[in-house]
Length: 462
Image (tube, rainbow, N blue to C red; front, top):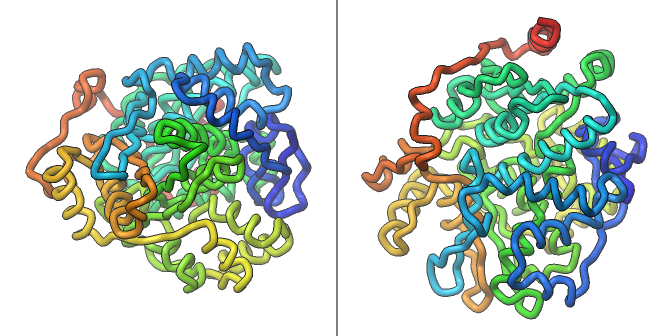
């Protein structure tokens, strides 16, 4: 299995190389050269299997000879052994033919744990074998950072620096990043929004002297390994509702497009997905683009769903790459235009996108109303992001086809918004009950590339 860049000029890499590299040296994102497919019988055989068994079947074709079968099974078992539910990604029913896929039973109560816990295990195994150490730098709108710190804290071969927008994540999200005591993890509060954090991250990857000097690696959703791990729960949930003999649809609350793109990969692999629905909050650049209005940046407006407060959705580049017939030069031109404010999507590419993705949005008021209504009608307490998915799914779903809406975080990660909508303040699970009693450790830093590079090099040499 070989991996190529969406911009066409970076070296072709193996799975291990692409995983450890993160962002391609031409600024693009790595994708598989070809998408392996699973037969109808292979998909049907997943019925009744454990999540770990499904994960092995789905991901194995992508990893080449990076790990032996025995090694990979062991890494998967370690990754999901700490989850708080034996099914790992259980489903509950909200209404006739509408199901909620609970992706918040991992150690940081968010869907990012499915990918990050596995990435942590794979990094440790690959780096230990090589006798190497890397510096992981990530940008987060809240959940990626806490999941990354949880996955890599205390590991021998990595130092981790997470950039998050100061004052723009929930208190639970912040404390999950700032309370670990292991000295190899660092939370950096950047004066700016998430797009600023993501831009500085890309700047660091594109500064090759710095990148090579600190052996920079990335675990944001730009990392193909992140997307791959998220493909699994599309299969596990769809099979439990009758796939491959029955079509299913998915609605995904998304900001950075990685989770919905994982659904596209599942579809390409042979999973019978009828509709993939993108659900956005008031920062609705993806919804506007998919409705033919181009991809033009505006200001980021803070919301009660902060993990979706994004205007530059990195993984959308992967979707565009396929929509433009895998033309790397065309993608580079679009990304150059995005640097100047935005771009229009060609008619042919827009049609290709619209054949795969539908979209909708939810305002702040609609999000709060959905949290309240779902508690009343289905006895389910939703986080604001999951509520956006439920609202859009209710508008767009075909009653004859099962709709699975992804619940991306536990409501206790956003207690103020949930309490304001319902009068109920969700509590943290017992294993996290002392979160607000733990000491915090963070570093405030300007939204400045040189300041960040100096800080990171200083801490590495301390």
